[in-house]
Structures are given as structure tokens and as C-alpha cells.
Amino acid sequence: MTLLKTRQLSSPEPLFYGKTKKNQWAMVTEKIPDCSTVLDAFSETADKSRKFDLLLLICQELAKQHSKGVLQKDLHLGNFLLAHNNKVFAIDPGQMRFLYHRLRRSECISQLAALACYLHPNDSESVSKLCHEYAHSRGWHFEKSDNILFKKQMVLHRKKIIRRGLKKCLRTSRQYLRIKTGKISAVFNRDFCQKAEPLEFIKRIDTLMTQGRILKNGNTCFVSRITWNDKDIVIKRYNNKGFIHSLRHTIKKSRARHNWLHTHRLDSLGIATPKPLVYIEEYRGPLLWKSYLVAEYIEGRKLHDFLCDDSVTNQRRLDETRQVTELLRQLGKNNITHGDLKHSNILVTDNGPVIIDLDAMKVHFSRCLFKISRAKDMKRFAKHHIQS
Image 1 (spheres, one colour):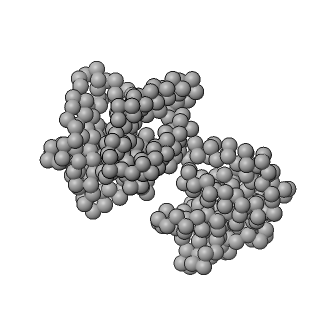
Image 2 (tube, helix red, strand yellow):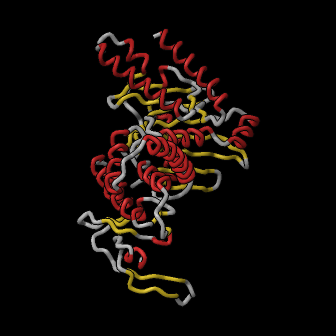
Image 3 (cartoon, rainbow, N blue to C red):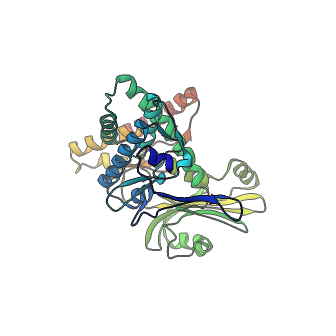
């Protein structure tokens, strides 16, 4: 904190530091009244313009830090306090490097890219404004090489964010509740089980599905739409198909778990898919027996039905086709194949196309295998397009 003050950077005033009775180092600082972390303020608002304003404030503070030789080792919004007058205070100096030489331009651009990853992946306009604000604060002119490096760093940072996010959504955290009891293992989105008992939902899930509106009842899976805890949801149960089937999915992990991770990955990439709420696994001894995926219900029409509707104007049909094309481009850009890409697995909604049924989705690390799978995806999609 003293080093931050020495470099004329905003931070809480250090009051005391020393060792506790347990011989651990501790520090006392002034309390900033009516403040929260920027991360909390960012997470609690749904206003996109407010989110962007918060990022602009951090962008300006980051530019100050860089100009004074301070580099965050673990840059995130939780390392800044926001006072009621929109003043930003830096905290956690233990995660900073204090240098006595000019920071490398590449280091600064990398941190700017990390900050830009808080924006929606497709919001290129806001990303551009953020870069302009940083460059203006530093007295820079962004060269072509800077833009190339910035984009590369954004890709790398977003991959790290997705990896961390996928790990976090499998354990108990502020957003998720993991339950493991007897033969049941489950992860709940905390918003879904507010004012309700998760174990009661698990206990009644088969009954609820039977009483709900059955959408599919096949040998492999059973799908039903129900209302629970005032929420309109769809439950997909992956049925047991014998010992070998159970053994294979015990080793490979459940299809519900894979689907849960896929939906979180797509959400991180800004690709629309129904919000995942719960996944549940039921075991018999060491073997996985059944699994369930619960997601929000999305009101929409299958792409095939939408395109065949004579009441839809040509302009609306063209606009939707462009959005679907962009959705497919985003999948390809991230080396993702759907595995069952047909018109019934894309819903047309008031907010644009939404992709569903991610059971066969794959993220490819081999470009060659991706191209083969992508070609199969597009061939299947084109076949349904011709039929429609």
C-alpha cells in the first residue's frame, strides 16, 4: 500500500502492519465508506452501459498504474474498490509488481486484453472504445502491430477464463452449489434453488417429469417441460441402457455433465443456448446409472418451421438467416462442432437464434479433425435446409 501511495496511485491508507499472535503477517488499512469491489458492482448490474462505464474507470486506473511502473500479476475486477463517487481504489498490492523501468508495450497490451475480456465476445464496438480510452490515457497511437497483438492476447485470455469458469461450475462457489449425498451427485445454480430445497427437487424429479409436458420419450432419453419454483424449465433424463453403457459413461463422465460444461462454454463465448440450471448424476455402487440436465425453457420456433412459414416476410427471413450464419461462424471460429446440426436444433427467438441439444458437441484441438467434423455438420445442416 505504501508503494502505491508513493507512486501517487489511489489505494486505502495503510494504518498498521505486523504479526498476529499466531505469527502471521497482517495489515490494517482505512475503511472506505459505502464501497464495494468493482467485480460485485459489475456482476450485480444488468445495464450494459453501466458495465462498460465500470470497465472504462478500471481502464483509466490501469493506464495510470502502467505509466508509473505498476503491473498487476493477477488482473481482475475484484482487485479494485469502487466508492460511492465512482472513485477507484487499488487493493491487494501483494499481487502487483513494482518496477523501476518503463513497462514493455506488450505487457501493457496483454493486460488491456485481459480487461477487454469482461465485455461480450461479439461487442467489437465497446472493445474498440476501451482500446481508444487506454491509448488516449497513455498518449499512445495504436499501431497495426498493437492491434494484432491485442487480438492474440484476447484469444489467450479468453481461453484461460473459460478453463477457470468450467472448473468453477463443477464445485461450490458463490454461483453454484455442489451436492454429494449417498448415490447422488449434483451441481445447482444457486439462483435456481433460492427459496426451495435442492434435495427435495432431486427426490421428486422423476415424478415431476412424468406429470409435466412430455416433449420426448425415447430409449436413450426422456425430456419433459415443467414449472418448478416459479421457473419454466426443461429436464432431460439420460436413461440407463445396461451394464456396458453404465461402465462406459462412468469412465467418460455422464452426458448431463458434458452438456452442462458445453452450455457454460458457449455462454462464455457469447453463443446463445438455454441457460443451464442443474445437472444430476445417480449412481448404483461405483457405476453411473442415470443423469439429468435441467435448463431454462426457451420460447422459440424450430428454424425449419420458421423458414417454411409463408407469413414471415422476406426481410425477417433474411435477417434471421444472417444471424444463424454468424452463430455457425462463431462455432467454427472456436473449433467447435455440434455433432447433430439440423434445423430442429436451432430455435428462432425474439432475441435471435438459440442452439440446443449439445449432446454430441465437441471442442477440437486438432485442426484436421475439426475440419472433418465441421464438414459433416455443414452437410447435415445443408441437407435439412434443402428439405425445408
